[in-house]
Image (cartoon, rainbow, N blue to C red; front, side, top):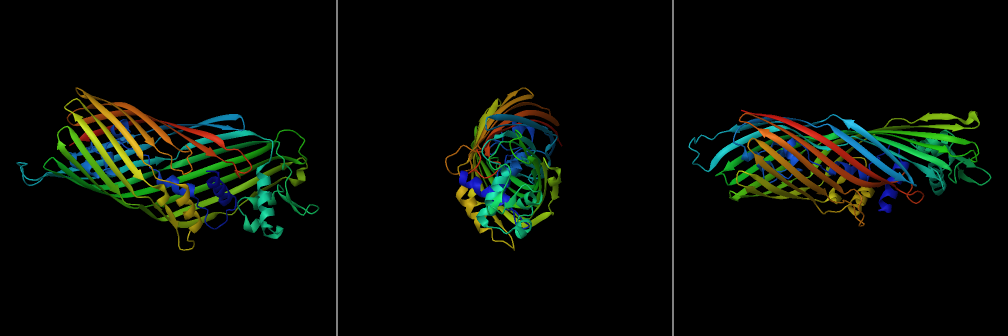
Length: 487
């Protein structure tokens, strides 16, 4: 696991106007935490064999075939994100509130010409709209005292290892090390004949604040059919869009005046990623008896043909001798590339307990090691090999239940998203629990659901060979409210 983060850090620290994509970027856009209507969220997304909910267009499109009429839905889903971190014995917390939309969609029911319903084809349904697939809004604070080294020492190590001449530093490392050199935080000691920094032995308070924004949403265009009320099929053409923004501030401040000259540094980074892709989904649901439904679906890899990253950075330094104080700004870096995320397959089972309720479960197979970057100017061989070695396949599980009390519904669910990394670590496992209720009338319905989730992750401020990881826990609290109309 440390090998993975070491490569990530090195790629980040040595960024230039060339590509700066990492395996972590591929994972971010390959992991899908399906959201949508409050009813769907109430069962933690375990709808692959249940059907008749707009969100199934993004999971098992055969679910559209179970509609008996037309419908329109709108879901609002405000999210409160909370994070906690532990680094070198110090703890920090932060939070973020985001007002988002979970879904909007319309289903049109097309009755067949055979009004007696005696034919094999009972009805055809067409649906379109969007479902949220991932939310990137969060804020993380990390702080602690480092008594061994500093970020600047990691920069000096890179320059010494590469034996970089001073005249090339700012051109070779325009977004990080070049800024540190230009602000006098890293310099060449002619007596030692190597690059050094003032805080080479630590004695600094290290802080980092990471703000992330954006989401991944998918426009879904689907068609489904009902054959003899036994066999349902569906197909979705999906158009996912990525909008990801990250802004971070890293600071070091000396703990005492024992460090000569140096007082503090501040390093700002900004990243924006956008892209639009396409995929196809095929699904079936079979009802061998009224009390059981069996579902299956496959999702093609998603192809993002026009991804673009833009990034910039700046650095400020403060010294006891104010003559050395400086601020430098990088140029705007950008890169266009393509991304392919993995194939997915789902198997589902639901038990219908008469008019009283249901219990359902989904298993989703996805192999994150199949994600790939490519472009016309770079074959991404190193990064793609790292994706293949660092990630694995296991699967995700979702279970849910719904019970009927007259016109009211009570729901609950649980989801487990397995660790995507190799090496036997428990990094990035995600647990989710949900509960909610709803009301159903002839032409109107409303649902409310609360969803809680937690994910742990190790984060290295820089070279893992020099620093311990910050142990971060991410929590999200989402309250989704859906209103719908049947016509």
